[in-house]
Image 1 (cartoon, rainbow, N blue to C red):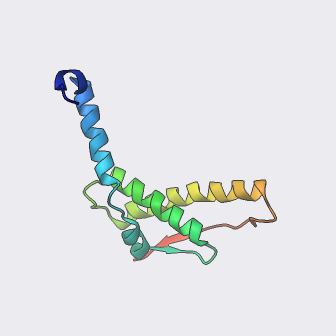
Image 2: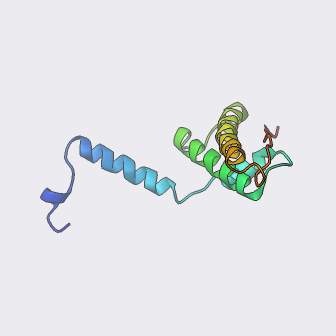
Image 3: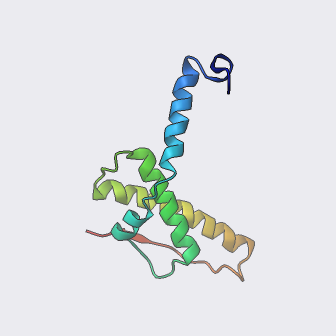
Length: 112
């Protein structure tokens, strides 16, 4: 990018570039540890389920609350949505290979 007049955006492109860079910067930080401290997982979570659930929850929290200030009710709503997304994956895995992936219902609870 030696010549900025050819490579840098103008008007809406500047806002898009800035937003994309902000989202890219947010990827470096994970809120999985925070999720692990405040959300209790059911016994039938496998390691793959736990990692996936924490990543989905972490990503949603960063997008919806970039300043990382949210209450238990908001965390519960996001955790339930992330759980639904992971449960859908588990349900499809069961449909594809029922012998390898038994039907299990996952659940989470937000700690007080």
